[in-house]
Image (cartoon, rainbow, N blue to C red; front, side, top):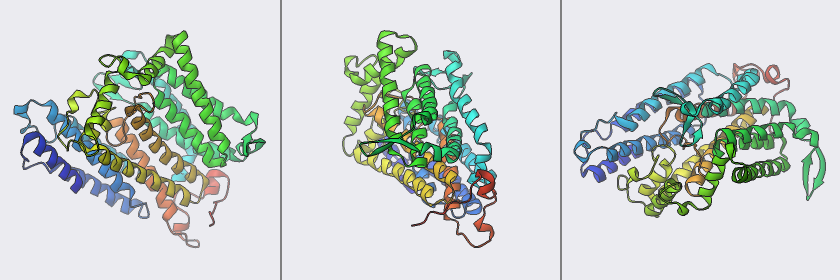
Length: 458
């Protein structure tokens, strides 16, 4: 929070030519919120990984600081110095952060053992599918923003159900693959040193592939489709340790995306939106003031930032469409440069690495797949966002975790961190003979999975 306060002070110095007496208040408010969560973690999950909360708090704090900077840029010059600290997009993000942290603390209080999620695996799987499909079947006026049908909009309220669906689906994937991994690990033939599965075992992958293509076509978003399919294939790889599943997944996804592109160019209809996005990606400068405007402005913003950036408060975020949500990474990049963005990516990498470490250390298969899938999903979402902004892949409607404005993404990702904290607590908890620490309150794994606890040996 000291870094967040320094960021806020620098923003005011560059935008206002002075530093107001209350520049420190957002950082102080965030500090109290995160201190409260820290105390909850020490009480409810005392062995949880201590690096997760500070890393995520830094990302969340930088996001709030930049949104406050965006509010200053939008305000009239005469009103900037008197703009209330808790007003505008930055103030709403502070409120959403409080709500998200309370939700994460509540999940830690309710879920005393991550294995208890497996009891509701099929319910969570069904709920995840329903949440994914709701925006696709709603009329565009209730679900579409920026040509992507990812929302539920009622009056002035909107929610992105897909953010919560990924958590529910991951819990179901982990449970299903724990039960089926022996079958899915069987190989039928060996090609170039890689063991490929039997044809009749491809069913689950094909089902998820079809669902991801439906998301791509009817919700008009490549990022969400890639996220759902990617997290299933990687969880499958973690469960079976078969590289062939990764190859099959890549072939299916890119083959499906290319098929959708061809159908968009010939048939049109629901495939036309993806075709247009692919065309913008291939050559955004063909129509720099029309269809390619947002991507072109994002590339120019990153180029303006250069290596060291214009400094916090020294950029022009109002020239970049949707800078508070989809393009916040580019807006921040203009002011902190390539080195600053690299530092943010390293913080994300740290969170992912600690999640994978928890997956390696936890003693049950369900926890391994759950933590590994959650960590990879967070990393994949960051890749999808940064890849779209930097023109590596077509633009998506995904938000940058913990940085972008919006309550759905912030709450879902804090819930993700809460689950990782719970898994890491179980992984790091010392095992003593017959004591309560040897068997957390969620019940023995044999009751939840039908199999004894697995011990990972060096």
